[in-house]
Length: 529
Image (cartoon, rainbow, N blue to C red; front, side):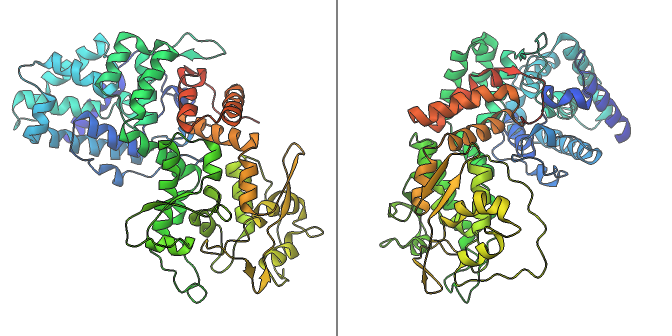
């Protein structure tokens, strides 16, 4: 019976819809699959559950590919994941019918099979069902009593339809079925734009108001889309989603498991890692809340600390475990790159790590490509009194690592020599004065000279590269794919406005969701050269 039921549901799930290309080559942008967190939040909102099911914790993990976990290229369905979806759909359907409160919200009285199928189907598929789809699901509903003989017939129909729809590509994927576009792209329909908006800002399905806007045709213009985006931005789910973006863009998740040499840093303990993580997240979130932009990310002296973090920052008067807003010394701290989390993550057990600090800024703040490091001799010996001297001895001018390190990586990393392995400020290293001055050459040949990390951060905040890099990463997160040549004009425009006009992060988001890149499907996947 179970095998027959599974085959029946699979046939119905895959049979709903006309002329849909489900081959991998055509699926990537037309059918972006829900991420595991999106599956969880969608099921919660679809059934109005008080909490998430937690079932996705048992799903086959997605492969690591690209910067963000919503990258379309990584979101396939393996045979193992398909079985996970099948089991989860069965579990959800059974529990929904068994819970009187959830069932009452799902099936208001009075109703009939067709009304239930069309109403629930529109929410599950995030669009109205076609007549042929409705007819097939109604037929499935009416035959459910034979498959669940111990269930009341109507409840059996609900159970089977729910179980089937949760295994459909139109639930598991954000189906974008619009056609008729040319080389420039295909304009998306209102329901498709509604889903793009909701999964960008809420990581979940549209709400009733967004569905209504799609139904009324209000999402057919950039103004209508912006109006909905402004409304949705005030929802707490948007704040969580922006936090998710920063978490991945700036690798904040890597702060949790930090370890340091206890003999050198007697106040260090593993619990500080999660605190560093929370402090970084709160700082980045505050930029959004206060309508800040890229420059504020790189220069703000606001911080959110408890007593433990205050000791590392050398901020007096903070007691207890609660986080509170403080203003750091502008002479020693400026923006995200001088936060203890970034500094400690990019450090060894005992010393600052100028190489990894420099690599991060090149790759993640300036979006500058760095060549793969050369193979270093096994007997390489670090020589020098200070950390900077030792790093220079193996990567400086005249060494095998001079090509990339000497001009591109090391200068940015050396700017942060004033911060030790746990992120605390210092003026000496091994008894010698810290040297944090350097000169950096951008990819286009321009150079900047700086005295320390604060000076560097302030100069980066005025660089077009930093603004373009942030816009590029945010666009990748919004559209769920690598950027293409077609995206370069938008990135350049957003970066210029961010640099010249101090465009807030919120306005950068609005600029993206009202752009052609968001409102149209390009059917092109791949990074720009």
